[in-house]
Each structure stands twice: as structure tokens, then as C-alpha cells.
Length: 119
Image 1 (tube, helix red, strand yellow):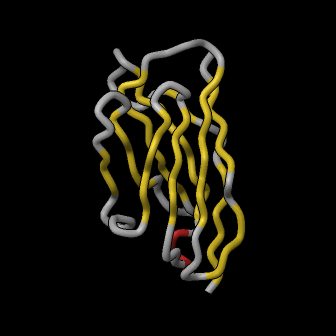
Image 2 (image 1 turned 120 degrees about the vertical axis):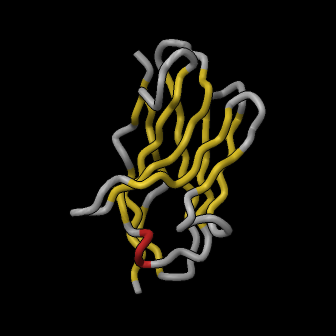
């Protein structure tokens, strides 16, 4: 089965930066897109960023546009999230997800990595 593993989370002061990584393993699969979502305690999950696997087109949530950058390594099924100018409201568990070809939506998820931004 496909497995997604996130890494790179941690504690950082407001205004700082972090880079998250996600790697897929297990059964080979064809990705339509991969992305990042986040969820803070007591809040709904929020879309952060996504990238089309073939063409590399990127999309960002309104709250992170201009500060975060998503990228990928095409043949390695790795995706990254560079987070700059972090704010306390960015504190959340960040999840990597894959939208596999043939699926209606994102259908593979990682366990998440904690990002905490102190004020």
C-alpha cells in the first residue's frame, strides 16, 4: 500500500522558516497531484498548497499565499513545503496527501507533522 511520511516539523519563532518534506513509498502509483493540508485543535482542516504532478502547476490557500512554496521531485514522489514568515496562526499539524490518478479526490494521507510557531 502507498505510504506517505512527513518530516521537518518543529518549534519556530514568529517570522522564522521551516521546510516540510513528504515521501511516498510502498506500491507504485500514478499521482495526479500532491498537496499539504493542516489542522489546528478545535478547527476544521484547511487546504494549504498543492501541485500537479505532471505539469507542476501550483495552488495555494489564501492564508499562505506569498509565504509558502510547494515543490516536488517528479520521479521520486517527494513533495516539499517551504514555509517563510511564519505566524502563530500557522500552528497546526500538517498533513501530506496524494490525489492519485483515477480517484475523485485526495485519497492517501500521511500521519502528519507538528508545526508550532511561538509569538
